[in-house]
Length: 353
Ligand code: ZN
Ligand code: ZN
View 1: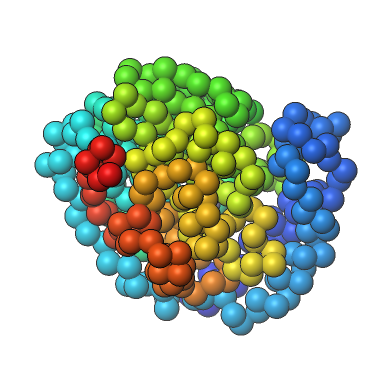
View 2: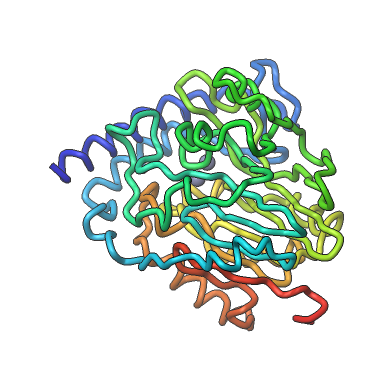
């Protein structure tokens, strides 16, 4: 049964990806305005013929993909510190739900990043990539959520069941073009933003910042909606969520305009095979470069250890991060990983120096 599901999952990913990526060979203008075919584009990035690359990747990965069953139990899940979470801490506090989902508390606000609580990141809960590390708690256990930031519309970042569970209570911040999807589902408390736009929410400013990625939920909507990272700027502390991204030259600009950040959440997984994935995902060495570019005092690794979406062994991102951190002469606290469910308080930068 597991084997059958794996084959089905691989087939599903291959099918969707091949159609999506085949569309990318259309000529595109090199700016973030929509091009003639009304699609968004990464500025300055030439990705070449991704369709032939995708076929090569799919052919080469046969028999090499990490299996769901061998990945289970590799990442212990722990209980969040509910007493801290429910006390509405003033100091920047994060709790990792898994993948790119973080519960972030900053200056009196409780914010979620790319929330997914579903078993699978897929158009259906019957097939598609399945979670190998369980969620630490169900969405019903969440405290009242003030805001949610969404980086883009891929299934592992925009989950329909989770969106419906949260409903209209939080303010949803989404990149240009994504609001329509929410409105169709009756969710109207949505602020849609372009890169570099700012929005004041309570004591914090929410800024839609760039990333280098792509979008699409079907074979027909590749790059029709924008992708982004998000900066959350408080009066005392600053947090940056990288979203899903390759190494963008615009990150230095984010650092200049909005850094330094007390904490950045940066992906460290989904980079295998690198020859194919690196334009749209970072490896741990590049994640450290992103950390430096945006001027983060501390960073936490995300987008690993939860779903199998790429070829690298599931424990490799953490191992490589350690190696790369040592090469760069950085302390562990400067770019760390936490356990699924773990709550961590991020001290004010004035105290950490
Ligand atoms: Zn993505
Ligand atoms: Zn992703």
